[in-house]
Length: 76
Image 1 (cartoon, one colour):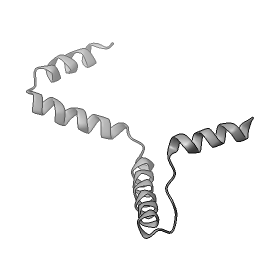
Image 2 (cartoon, rainbow, N blue to C red; image 1 turned 180 degrees about the vertical axis):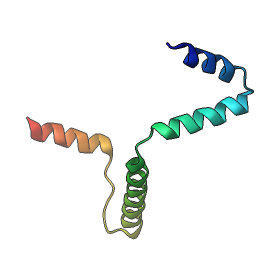
Image 3 (cartoon, rainbow, N blue to C red; image 1 turned 90 degrees about the vertical axis):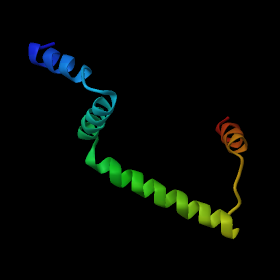
């Protein structure tokens, strides 16, 4: 590890907890793929759509254990 990074790490660890948390959040966000946010939003919209279909009775929910059991049986 370079001396600059080690110095920075030492300085950051001396920050109060809230400061470290804020810095951690900024650093983590800087590593995320910008497309991930739109993907997350798309999944939220899909989940809401599926919930509404179930609520209206357009589709019937199935227990995941049963779905996987049927899938395994078909694979054989």
